[in-house]
Amino acid sequence: MFIAMNRFKIVKGKEKEFEDVWKNRDTHLQGVNGFKEFHLVKGNESEDHILYASHSIWASKEAFIDWTKSEAFRLAHKNAGQHKDLYIGAPNFEGFEVVI
Image (tube, rainbow, N blue to C red; front, side, top):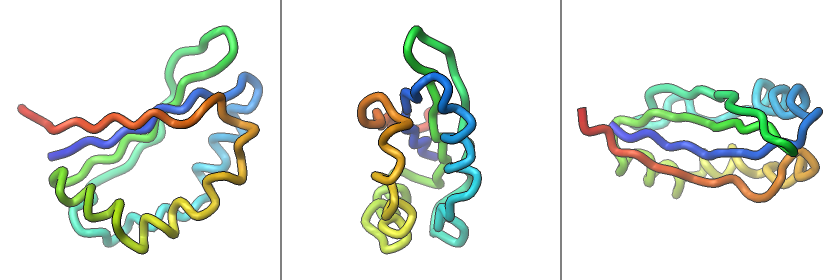
């Protein structure tokens, strides 16, 4: 199993707008080979931002990598630049292989 996470620093006061973008977007994940589940999680508050992370679970690292090369991935991310005012910096990707 593989867990893919992107951490986002969201400008304070823009949390609802950020959450709405994620709630209303088409992820194009349903039916993708190896995809198990997705969560958007909210973390700690800092001086200038709120931490969020997208958290997807995959059958394997290979399944995740295959998705990143797919048309479904391109469709899911085609409008990613539209909401730059919500973010402080670029997302930070972290990938984890489950060991237990």
